[in-house]
Image 1 (tube, rainbow, N blue to C red):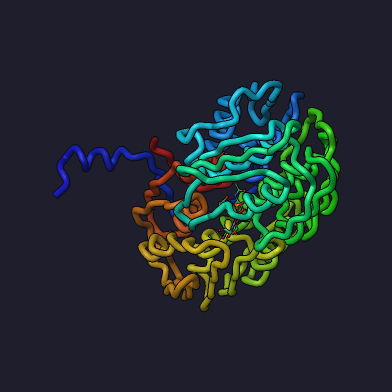
Image 2: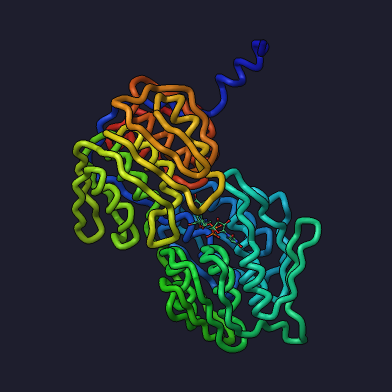
Length: 431
Ligand code: EPZ
């Protein structure tokens, strides 16, 4: 039996109280993209000059990245929605384990450090709850550019031989179109001698955003957004002011919030072509969608089951698989969801089952029989996107749910509960 102190500690754990059977209305603003912002921040290491990022989301992951850069000697100043970074001098190319182990994106520093200084030592980010997430492709790419890379005691040690410590342009064909590896090699290749080509590159909008910002800094990159990217190395880069793209995953999450509560909603700003696969699936399952420039209007009608397979962009994004599964739990009929990117990204299933969802799992496939009504429960988020899925399921459920694991939610959603409350939800945070 747990003692009284243990029970009261449990009650005090930070959580959301989410009232169910909500109806939403109005227009919701999407924040800047977390996965763009994180990599754009590391690109500031490539120049001595000031880099200013606008539309920066306020998230604990952004805070973590800022701490890592400051630890390396980067000057950082922040205002709401903005950050100025200046890597005039980098006095430490070995960020400590304590700062990097929780933040996989910290590994992105290796590309710019090698390009600018010719050396870097970064602790391996390690596995995470959704899968093993190796960095073999990043390392293969850096080796192709001439770096000597060894992994010792959990630390990746990379250096460029020679007096000039300059990487050399090369041709790289990735085994899989890894987002992080494409971004790492792009940032390393911009200051290399000669031309590099990356084949089987990731085509995600965040890769395109990075290439666009690097070009604003004086880089010569062509083809980002397609499978082959060419980088002509330049001598140096300069500072820039750059606006982070809207977060397509947050936009998708808000659209699914509208669908699961059967509420009409407007979501802005978005870049509609970043959301094509998601808008298609929302249409297929019974939502009327209208796109007008930067705004998506969603009008859900009866939601019917659809099948989903996660894929690299432009396919359906793995980062919306959990939220969409919450929606399909309430759909009429059967849906089949197959997770193809990560080996362990179905952990939300057991929590959805606790809310009355009818889901069978076989390997990386979930078969969902929609139920007419989910019921509120005490639930725990196991990762960022499962946290979002739990919030959405709770908005639809009968009764008041209690969601723990808010540290996951706060890594990647800026004020999610405030935004939803603004649109008519009733969510209370107890910190
Ligand atoms: C980025 O991770 C995102 N993170 C992830 O967002 C997102 O899920 C993922 O891209 C896919 O879209 C950031 O941008 C910070 P990958 P990344 O390298 O770059 C395998 C979220 O919820 N692979 O494209 O780490 C890997 O195991 C998150 O916001 C190799 O096999 O993703 C995975 O199965 C989570 N070898 C697949 O490729 C490698 O060397 C995709 O990984 C590298 C990757």
